[in-house]
Length: 219
Image (cartoon, rainbow, N blue to C red; front, side, top):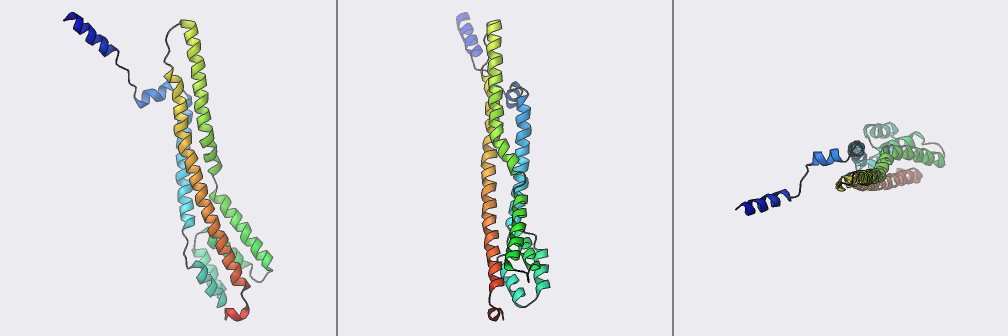
């Protein structure tokens, strides 16, 4: 009976020790706090840019047709009012183009392109930081692993004891947890912006076609 109890006690003692998320986080050291801040920043940038891009992508399919009708009818003020009331990059592009009507076509085109470049720059605001996080977080995690391994081997050489090597790997896991979603989020937002740029170019071409229509077709 005594032998059985001793064996049971030894089996219980040999059961692997489990650690909660909080314990693992703290075991990773101060670099885990850096990764936590980067993760929160990545989430904020992604959500904020996603909302902004989705808002900019809402386009009235009849917008350019209404602009065409107003221009053909000579109702420039109505065309401008429509652009002002439509809060999208395309509307701001067309608004600038309407302001340049009467000037050479190259001036109109350049004005539209300048506005388009500014709008794209606004949409891309924050994305370089997201890209940096997606690449930098895994590197920070790897740095934490290297530091942890160095400390572990130093402790082993000094004390000759057994050191839990898994602690050194925690920051690598944390870095990948932050970096991988940030990477996919960055590429997703870039794809949305490229789609919007294509729509902006298509509407710019349609607007220039309106201005280049012969007078007899406008009547």
